[in-house]
Length: 283
Image: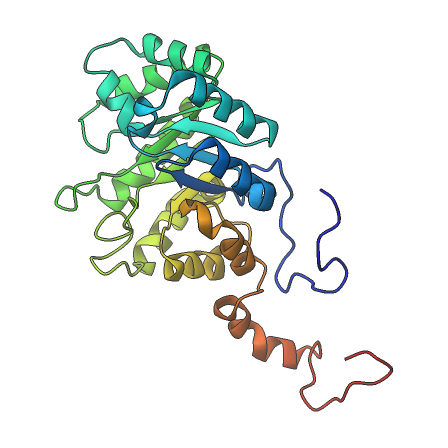
């Protein structure tokens, strides 16, 4: 990375961010229709802060093949993992063996595949075989746990058990379903508020494996919660592409929502004395 605009002037106010490529603290963005030109502009400003690029649900099915391949090459050049949304795989399985889907994903230039059963019921034994299918194709398996229908949500114990199995079967990351709305599914209530009790139960059940989770958190309040809960290096997903720099500011304590909570600590440890005046050109 070249020199940043405020290098050595503005410092991270929280724990240091792990640098790319990273396995924890990943940011996964949701793309539902960015052009090549828009993608280039986004990468120019925020490419260093994006780890995973998901082509939401079935949107990649409507992109010209050559355009999609060029876009995937561009993202690969910025060391960004790319994958189609899990719903696309669910639909493909209605007509094809998973090998057909994986072969096409590899041919197009995707580097990973998301495996979900958010809509269609997929037995656990089939899920294991699909993960194996992804690995045999030379792609990276990323699974998603949870249902999209608010009326049919898994229990916390089911979430824990499925995450453990997915990781044991070879998943590199497991996404906790939050949908693009962040409301009424997973650990979110109908208004988007995080159920901390359920999050704590998941943490207790998974221990160190929690680091392999990516929490879908499209709302700023949810992002703040997880950053305060787990620190700057928490995996967050379904981030609006235009909000990548805003999220990185949250992670680094360069925004009111995560700096405000540190203010008392800054005063206590002497990093900030509100009564000290500037001198010799320094504050």
